[in-house]
Image (cartoon, rainbow, N blue to C red; front, side):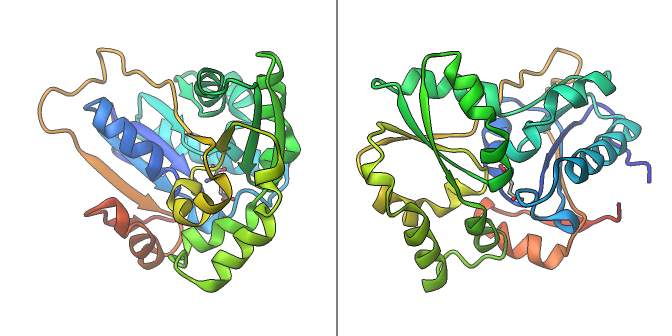
Amino acid sequence: MNLPYKNYVGVLDSGVGGLTVLRQLVRQYPCNYVYLADGAFFPYGTKSSDQLLARLRKIISLFVNGGVSAVVVACNTASVFADTLREQFEIPIFDVVTPTCNAVAAATQTKRVALLATDATVQSNIYGTVLAQRGIDVTSFACSAFVPFVENGQVDTVECEQVVADTLRCLPQADTDTVILGCTHFPLLSKHLAKYVGNMRTVQCVTDFVPDDSIKVFGAPNTVFLTTGSDFAANRASLWYGKTRFVHIDI
Ligand code: DGL
């Protein structure tokens, strides 16, 4: 399928979590964005590296064939593969891990931080590796169990509250001053997380995408929302974002 998105910026995540990154981008840079929620392959955080890499190659090829000028990987689990993807594709590919680590370095005073991320991101140790280069020690919490509650619009349930409690009970004793919300779905869980985060600082994922002059739009910029999964589910889960309307595509 060839998508007509010449001069757009492609933004991807497994689902609605990447909208937390898109929202920052739209506010900061007036560009045309095409956001892809990969609902058919959701969740990313419990998939193998081979499965994920193959899927990401497919999505970025689709973006490239559609004419996008740059890609923002608005997903930590997928950002693990950003360097490998940059070797294959010629367009600029931005991820969230290194920019988020820079924000963490600016936030922490004790240089001891906690990471809440998917099982795959924790297993990759990407945050541990990048932050160790800045002299920062990371205690990780594998939180893939949180993700479906956000994606399915079930944050306001006792089950969700219980899963967060079971996973983060030890967080207050971790002796850290900063908590990385190392999954783009997690800012949408902040009301449950607050109880365990307490007075620690939180750092939400950011990207270092800056448009070059060729893709800046001076006028009314457009954002298009696509999902490979159920458009109904994506529309329901993204209600918090505003007037989002997802259109289903098959990959
Ligand atoms: N939102 C994604 C992340 O930042 C992944 C969630 C998932 O699909 O497991 O890691």
